[in-house]
Length: 307
Image (cartoon, rainbow, N blue to C red; front, side):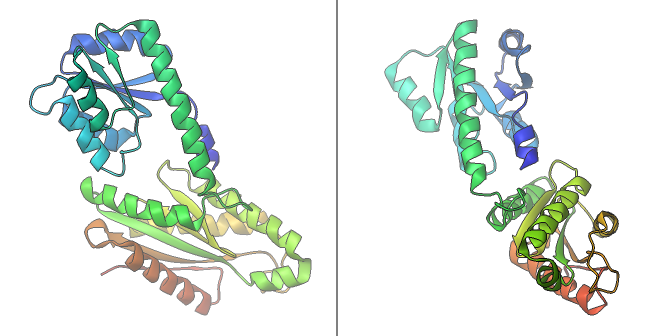
């Protein structure tokens, strides 16, 4: 959740126009207020969106090969980027052409030649609306106790991460399934308020360790958590798991009824080539390895590669 709030900083606007001069004009208008990305074709714009996920797109209508209408329709057909608002920048004035912009999926359009004040006001209005919508949407995906993402977000985002990895021809994705050892005994001894505080501290520590922008830390349910590590092989997952084991132990939360006398975690890891990956398969394998970690005495990591 903290990462979501942090993302509300300087917005990124993608400007798409086959004429570099037009891009430069808009850049000079926006450059002091926004991070500006540029693309000179529909194909390039789609790739930039998938790689960088801009907050808003300014899209020229008249472009060779793949025009703006076709580009916008392709964006709306790709669920990983469909929510990005598109404003058409056009020199067309006919009602039929305007209707085509709306039907393609635009949220607005601006006439050429571009008026600087109009452009800035339109962008600000649509970014404000998008961020309010994103924030409300995020509330459905946040665990109320720990403030990290919940299982609903995990299930939705894992499928998207797998799709992105396949499209970008990345090699492997890893999942870590984490369980707080003997947590029922902790609650029995210290009470549920202390248990809730322990869950919050563990969740915060997991997020502190997994700092890459695309890493996902989510509460899976009860005392179980899941970490998704996109574009990460078995060795990378092993390193992260080792850091997590150490970081939780260093919290030194007292748990006298256990062998180590402090709160510890067990971790099951699953790594899969993107070509073979599915949400169900990687989750089942990670869960199986978590069971193996518990059977091995807990406070350890067991992992396997999906074959």
